[in-house]
View (cartoon, rainbow, N blue to C red):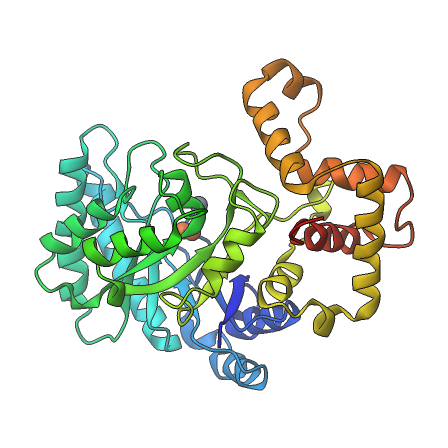
Length: 371
Ligand code: FE
Ligand code: FE
Ligand code: ZN
């Protein structure tokens, strides 16, 4: 069974909070930071409602869950204080992860800043050797995340991931988190040749290392090296490719985590599309939202047909315009889904729905193939 979930909050009642939020989206898994990702303050893990959270997970038939290491950790840093903080804090996070009973902690390998990639890879391996040796009683694996190649980050190619693994003495507790947006942005053709990408991954890293999938669409074309996530279906990867990936034999057994942006016109009231994205990727939108939901999508489809809007062409043309025409972008910076939302509101297509409900249905309309 494919298990899809999202990034959720571990605040207040820790795992109980996280599991309840995930259940609200209809998730089969989820991912969380054990505390604020930008600092090292942590509440004791023993007080994070672990048993209560696990009861909610069992009730909703959730599978394996995932922890994400805080992004202040940079094992690639040449600065001894930054490096040592990264080593120490990652070890603590692994102990916390182990306490919750989670098998994989996702880690951005690191950035080489003022040095070079070769230095970064060696430094990251040095850090991982220390971290793994210092946590050898734990059953937690470190899942190195494939990166988009922004700035000086390491992990932009399968070769870089493999090079780190090769330099780690005992790499049996190293796994990989495959992020669809990042791999696409790094230049791999996961849209038209996911089989080929998986074949490369298997040859260079080994499919047995694959432990987590991050499911994100991308605001940029393949190879852009940017790392900007889009809701599933509203970016360059598109729903059809995302759905093929989710159900691909090579990956369908691993926890799949959405890290897609929350949307809405008022930044303070933005909502996630997770519930819709999960239901659509699993083909369970009617089961989740009822038959009225399908009728609403039909209304939207009818409206956009009348407006002569082809969904894929519209999404890609809008992103292309925003990227290539600075003047037009300045005049109107709205992203594709916001433009579609405004059109639907202006023409009062589904006037009784909340912004979130309409955005769920727009996400669903974007996920339909053909006309
Ligand atoms: Fe990440
Ligand atoms: Fe990610
Ligand atoms: Zn990212």
